[in-house]
Length: 526
Image (cartoon, rainbow, N blue to C red; front, top):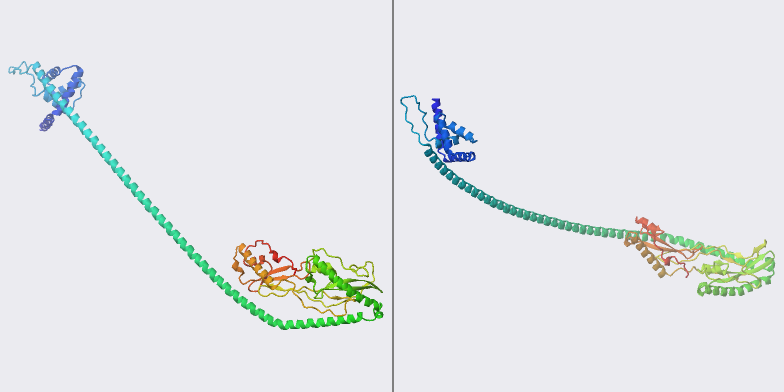
């Protein structure tokens, strides 16, 4: 049963395989190529196969061995197809010659079978070749169509990629433009915000500066009012003190005048009391009047030659100074007295006092009796018989500012009176102002204040810092620097500063060297 089932299955498989003409054609084509290579024919092969089949060998084994002999390894399908071609009917086993009922042989002639087989094989080969060519053409057409389709797809993909790239580039460009526009807008907004902040800051600074200036102005006004009140109180308090000082000075002047008159009385005493003849005294008195006028003229001429004006010595007077050495009277010499009573021993001294020290000055006047300008040396017993007045005057100096310009006076030394001086008491003349005029002093103060503001501005400050400040000029009256103007700066609170450098330190500014104005450096010559 199992054998029948397997045989049935094998028969069904062979039937299915035999139904496929292509398998038989391919097997026949391979067999034909092998025969051509071996220079054999199908007839010889068929005869050999038939002989083998007559010998009882199965058809498949015959075909397999035959094909292996031709170096062809057929598959099972090819064997089934070839066996159907070459062996259409199963061959009966060869009859035994010894039997009585042997059937007659029905074998066809070999030549007839070979010709049919060759014709059938040729037809099948032609059909197979035509089919193969048709399949090859279809395959080529399919490949060409496939290539064209692939080319179209590649072009489509390229176009799509190009379009995508173009769209991506456009998108990126739009994004970059939007980003640039956004950055520009942000930069513009930032600049606008900075401008607004700067404007607000400047406005705040201006407002703060205005408020500070207003506060400083109010403070300066308050300080000025306080200073005015303090000055008024000080003036009220100083009025009695000044009156007392004036009374004391008048009393001192009266005492000095009394002493001076007493000395004159002693000088006018008889010659016996003075140790010399009376006529000598009268001669000296007459000589003093004559030589005094000459000396005054000579002084005027010397001042004019030195570059000054004759009015500078108005009020100056000259008097001979009688000197004694024991019982002998030495030659008298001339001395000069200023209107304030100050004595000068020579013309150069008067010129130096008037600010004409650089001029060529004349020698001192000589008296008819001998040399009046120099004293004799080597006389140990020399005595001077002049009478000196002991009243001295204090040095006078006045501070000048733009609001209060006072008179400036020179300092006066002790007044000396000689024996040959006139008997009349020299009246002390009032102190006269030899400094600049009020208009000139005010102009100098204003110029100094302006220069202070420029100096502060050059040092990094502002000219408004000197608002409420005052400048005062002090004229030196004595010494080699007589006539020099000292400039002092007063803050609104009354604090005094001696230089611009001190003012710069008050405002915490670096001091820069500035030249002092020439108008404040010159000596006073008027």
